[in-house]
Structure formats: C-alpha cells, structure tokens
Image (tube, rainbow, N blue to C red; front, top):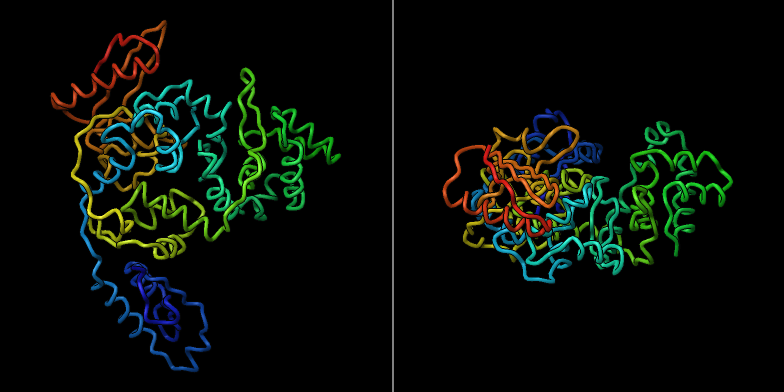
Length: 431
C-alpha cells in the first residue's frame, strides 16, 4: 500500500524555523520521504511547529516501517529473467506481446532490436520484424524514452505518447537559444510536420522542403536538416512523426496516424506500472534514469500511486508490483544479448545484474551498451560476432572462468544465432 505520511495530506512538509535544512532533508530523503522545506514557512511561525522533532519522528517511523519483504539479487534476477522471457523463449508468434511486456525494444541499431527478439521469442525472424514495422505497422519506430530510438507496439502508443507529452525540455530557454529558434517556431514546425506527413512518406530533405513550402520560412528547413533529430524528436514526442521504411541509405518518415493519447498523469502512472512489471523490484532512481523525464520525488509518487509492495533490495528501498510477489525460482539459462538490449539498459548502474568491477566494459563511453553474455540473469562477459560470406564467427570475452554447462549453453546459442542470421557457424572462440 502507498506510504501514508502523517503530515499535511500525505506528503511530509517541513515547516522550517531554525533547522539545519540540508541535514534534515538528507535524513528524510534517505528514509524515502518527500520533503518540501520551502512550503508555508509563515505557517510554521504562526503555528509554532517544532520542525526538527516532527521530521525526526517521521524519519524514525519510516525507518521502522515494515518494508514487507527482503530481496536479494538472485531473487530479483529470477523475476527479470521470467518477465523478459530469458529463462525460456516465448512461443512463436508472440513478438508483439513480448515487446509490449518489456517496454519496447531499443532501435539505435535495428539489427540489435532483431537480436533482442531472437533471444526471447522462438522462431523470431528479421523478415517478421520488418513486416511488422513497414507493412503491417503493428510496430512503430520512433524516438521515445530518453530521446532514444525504440520499437513500440502501435497499440501501446496512447500510453507512450501521453507520457512523452510531458517532455518539454525542448521549449526551455537554453535549448531555444542554442538552436536559434523561438518557442513559437518550434510549435509551428511540430504542427506543420504533422500536416505534411499525413498519408505521405518523406526523406528528411523532402520533409524540410515541405515545411519551408508550407510556412515560407527557410530557417525552419535548415534546422530540420540538422543532425541528431533536433526538431524531429519533439515532433515524435507529440505524435506527429515516426519512421517509415528507408529508401536505400536514406531515412524516411511518416505520420503514425491518429492516436487517442492518455491523459499525461494517467499515462505516466501506467508507464510506471509497466516499468515495474518488467524491471521490478526497482528504486525510484532506477525509474528516473530509465524514463529520464521525472525527478526522484516524482518517481516515488508514481510508484506509491500503484498497487505496489515496498521491499528491501540489497539494503535499498525498492518497489515491486504486489501481484509479482513472491519471486519464482531462479532458472538456469544462457543467452547472448545484443548491444542495447533492454535487460541491460534497464539494469541499475550500481550492479546486481553485472559485476561492478566490469561496469566500464558493459556501459561504454558515448552511451554505447555492449553485447553481453548472460548467465542465469547475471552478465558474465561481453561478445561480438562477424558474418562474412555466409559464415559466422563468434568471440566470447568472459569476465572469469566459465563452467562446462555455460560453455555448452554458449555453443548452443551460437548455433541458434547462425541459423537466425542464415549463416553457418564457423568459429566460436573464448578470449
């Protein structure tokens, strides 16, 4: 059940008098409380509230609060493995259900998205993925969480676009000044892109030309041609743009079609529920990092608005959907996960799913996330492959000694990978 705070409508308000505010704020936040020292100081003076004793009393209550369960990382891995279908592959034809359940596939590299499906769904194929994207349009490729490319089920767009409507950083003064456009011009671009893409598929250059023709502003066309999706991302957040099948090496865009977005508050709560369903038990910091559109305090409020069970995970307060307790037994499995796999992207950066000593080999500079060897839900190495002339070479770089069971599992996965890539496994080496 959500935590009921004793002070002022369920959120702790510290009415500051002569209080060491940083010290009290640190203590309260460590206890998982929402502290707002700036609220109604005049009330504190009028009511003569003894702040320090009130805060200390509530912190003490929080620390003695029954967290429900204590989890270790083996139990957490058991839950994540099952939800991500990495304990055993989901049946054929369940690609959309799996993508929905794990909150989308990362699509910086479309080949990696295909391999993420291969690792989870029996019989998944590259051709099937492309058909869902470009012909059936049951999957949509667009910029989403953290401004990164994702594949999302079209049926889930009301949730994601509702939540993405809270992304407003591109209207801040610093952003506007850096790119040399006004807020009004940004809004004009978003609206115009939606208009010109309806029923059409355009390259970036064609889209820029169409916006210039419609608005008469050459400046806006120049900004649209810039790299990194400067104004394309805001268009995607507003549901006015998504990717279409490319034309050779050229990227093309289209309109995702009419989407009845959820109310932003309701959409964020639903997204938090789905996140916990895929990645719980998780902390508010984990969600804030994954979504990158909420503060830690906002993340905690979202969690506590749901039917959750607070748990202690390796000494840290975390949250789990009430329906997900208790965890299943940890399944033994070996998987070769590609670069940017959601299981790794969603991993806490403090460890638990990977050896902290090897963090730099998993989470590399410029946001690159390595392809990893996953053993029983724990990252035990990195790997790479090369396909040439119908032959596949796979090289495993383990972080330590691998058991005979794990080596046999790696060999089986490498053979599966070769079949998926329509190649013959030529070499499998352990470096």
